[in-house]
Length: 358
Image (cartoon, rainbow, N blue to C red):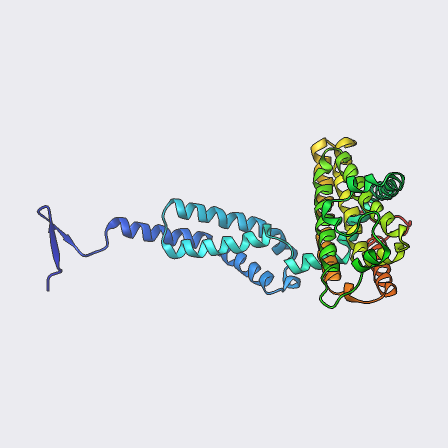
């Protein structure tokens, strides 16, 4: 039986592989055979790593991994350039992708990072900006005292300092009963909840601005802290005039100790970046600012978490009746944050008694 054939322009073309196809197949087989040992070695190393069998890797395997990855990547580039068969390309693409992840990919997952973050990294970042925290704390205390003294000297300062959303019934001249009513716990949580939500929104905005303005050598952050704490000082004066200082302080402390601590840290983080830019030391300004920015970014992640936690405190424990219960919660939260940030996560000391530097 004759082989079927077709005429193309007067010539006969038989259904047999063309010389070009045969040459391409031969070239692909030769390409694979020449490099297959390296690919298999790389695949064996990757298999052990992906299965968590790191102890079974020898030192030679660990040292060979980057070289084998580059060899596989080079093979993939050649295979794409010479248009080798699809199965070889698919295999190499998968192998190179797996190797890249092990060589250059992240060393830990999200949960592992978050565990280390809460397990000491956040506390260490805060401890490293202790000088900025001291400056911010001094400024906040000075701002509170300034607001109190200004309003005590001239009541008109109250309207100049305190935002209008806070001056519903809480104004100079309000009776003790009216002011006490604003702190009263109600079944519907209205009245107090609206005022607490306003305070939370205001404090969250101040925390963000205090950090964002730190690039200007920290001066705008300091001014913002002074103004915001002057508002607090004015309101403390208002309630103290009617003998409600401790009632207001206890009510505010439920979530206020967390929020104000977050504002303190955000202002310190912003000033830290500004201080690093103003006094870079032996480093360049950009390198010093980048180092300070990384540290401050970790602090701000903690600030965001504190603000969320403060919102939860505002939503639930504020329903507790009694000044004593509110004060206990506020003091407990303050002690908790101080202990967590400054006593927890300290770097271990070596035998000489000095802290180890990572």
